[in-house]
Length: 397
Image (cartoon, rainbow, N blue to C red):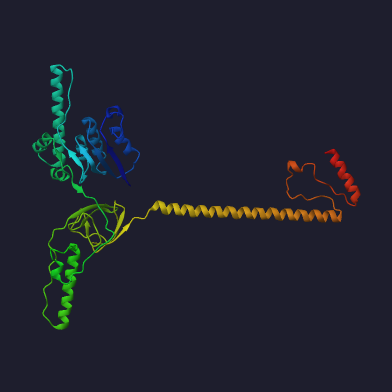
């Protein structure tokens, strides 16, 4: 089974004319068709970059994603902009990811009616109040927040940071940019105390390893010299920063210290079970790199090989082999024809010298250009008679 991809971009509308016939825009039918042509699948990833739009169409998308079944895992991901009814669609995912620079806005529904009677205006107000309560109820159910808290934040109609979206329950994780470092400058520490110095910019994990190494070296020196056993330096107590990344084997958490990018030596754990060690091996990340993990540490960072370039090289090699085979076959056919022609000439020469009847043509099939040109050499016919016969044939032709 595979993961289906769905893109919700631009305003959420009921027709192209509502979007001013300007792309991109998203309709309920677009989402249904995107999922339909990717069946079968066991998970769905919905990427949202939308300023919102019609409440009824947005709720239709929310209902469709929620109705895919208990066996289908839905992950929603907000990037760029996620506002208005788009925040309700974000709530359709069991895992709700949001990029750290996404612009978000939650607010109460808006609308209006023109040239309405008092009864019509009152009916419209009742419908708007029901719609407003429906959005509040959905938000409270999916986020776990009290309905009055959700209503108050919607009434403020202010931009919400990705961190606040997580705090409110609209999102479950803030995704930060992932960058692989090409080099790893590590300063060698002269002692355990210098490794933990506040003025040293050596990464925390390197300081810890260097401290343990220096302590082990001191133990060995003390054992040889008979000195007393020194105390082992304590590891740095600086709280690491957890960086969430997606891999081909699931979501991982990388402890990067105070950095926004992972590098060799960072500790890797499972996002769902941070206390359980992950298996050693290679993990392909969504940024195009492959990390090799051993003993829960990144040991190698390898850029992903371009499979299309490799496939293109293989195709070029195969095409070269085919062309070579065709050339060799053409040469063999040419050699066979030349041999046949040489044999035919030799047979004709022998027939003419012995006075035998019949002439062997190079080809077994008589073409239009050969019709009427075959000669019959009669046994015992003299050269003069043959010339005369040939002249008669030429006159007939």
